[in-house]
Length: 54
Image (tube, rainbow, N blue to C red):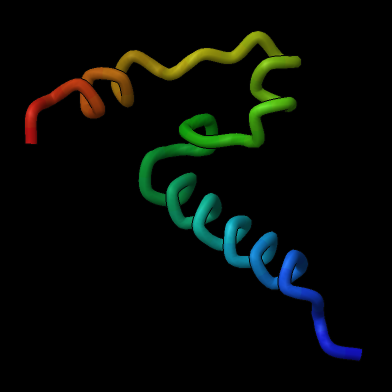
């Protein structure tokens, strides 16, 4: 049975998140419900990078 579009998109999202975690660390990105449940916030290093003018 072929995978649904949602299944393929979810797999692509997971792969993208894994690549970000590999490059910037495991706590850099997460699923919103999990992050909020754990009381997470954006790490200071990532915030500084995001606020830096490119």
